[in-house]
Length: 194
Image (cartoon, rainbow, N blue to C red; front, side, top):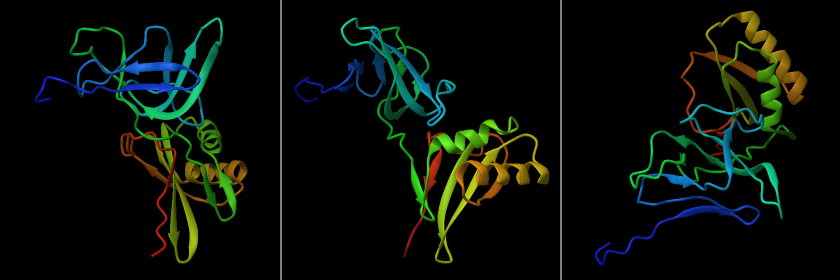
């Protein structure tokens, strides 16, 4: 910066090429005009609200190599407003981590898609996160669910869905909407073995 030279970043993949680029420092990445970008809940393909973190899906209609809803495996979020430089195309916050959150619990793999199937079975759930902890020398999993309609019957029904879709027993914790972090995680591996 002392010499008036700025280094800016871009976001690209080998399959797609350029996806988004920075035009001024720390103002987000402007989505390339030649692509269509969506941010979705990992494991579901369902769009999230602007500002919510999710997996980046990209569509490009390049006649030589078209890709429809290509899942990059990366997390990001759509930003509001326009860039400081005046460009009006939508922006993303940039790379915020990986969307693949598969975890091995008691010898079984659990995928975000399985958690999504549990959520889809219960329209009362607005958002969910499966947390895995190491308690008493054993893997313990709890599905934290945001809902406006907490009840013991809903807890029991969700626990049954966990057994059905994940093939494991897990606890259920019903929380108020807005309680879960906006970081795109569907499965949080919080195990500590010390």
